[in-house]
Image 1 (cartoon, rainbow, N blue to C red):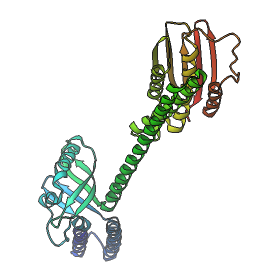
Image 2 (cartoon, rainbow, N blue to C red):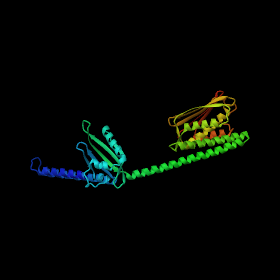
Image 3 (cartoon, rainbow, N blue to C red):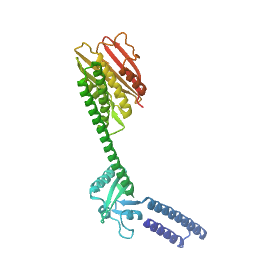
Image 4 (spheres, rainbow, N blue to C red):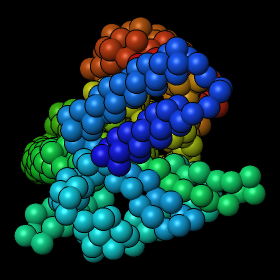
Length: 379
């Protein structure tokens, strides 16, 4: 701000000189009053400049102006220091500005300024300064352009703030977060693999059993484990460990069950779903519920049928509710079937899991097939 202070001081001295000349415009009292007003104005301006200088120093931020018409540059004292100079060292030029910019950032800085000037838009960017001794500073720059009545650029006014501490902390946080994400991915991957080993072991045990009822129970438990493993696999593949794509998860569960179940019928899968992401906890609950419903359908819906179709529809209602329907074109439920009948572990699980999801459910059956529908809040 030294040059601004000097300019103000010079203007004040010129005003005093004019008032001291012999003229009939002002009386001596008027001259004295005007001088007092100018002195007070000068003091107020200097006070304001001092406050700006203090703010610059505390924030480590410098002001600058580039006069395009005469190709001159003004730097505040703090801008010199941000750039690694003292105000008395140099007269700022474009060369001094460019020689400090990191070579890897130079073209980006040039193009950002050029584009903002052409578009008459403010610019904002973060770039690096590289000093002869090798140390690096991170600079956050803001700029605004001034144009004449014909739209020609006159000047650019801007700020450069030293944000090295902030940027280094941000990079450290990003590095730590990356390591944390890698660790989480590895955990989900290992859990998925361990569950796969467990499911494989149970599959081998199933092959050695002769009791058909026990084999069915063992197969159901194996499929439940695989469903849980599938959720961990989706989390492993996801970029966000808080949510997974529900439709994709359900599609894989259904496909795996059709392949794993000992079916006498040729079953095709017809599935349509909206792009819905749920928290891993809610996805786990919903996936286990889908596993039980599809397992029951594959067990009972297609007895004596050469082929069948399983249809799944997943839709979202205004980001508040999720609708899921699973329909088969099988033989339908027996006449004496009751929806709330405590007939199997599978039905108990369906009831419990629906309660956990706070889901309302309907079950409709006819000779043309059975449809299980439910609606539950997203949150």
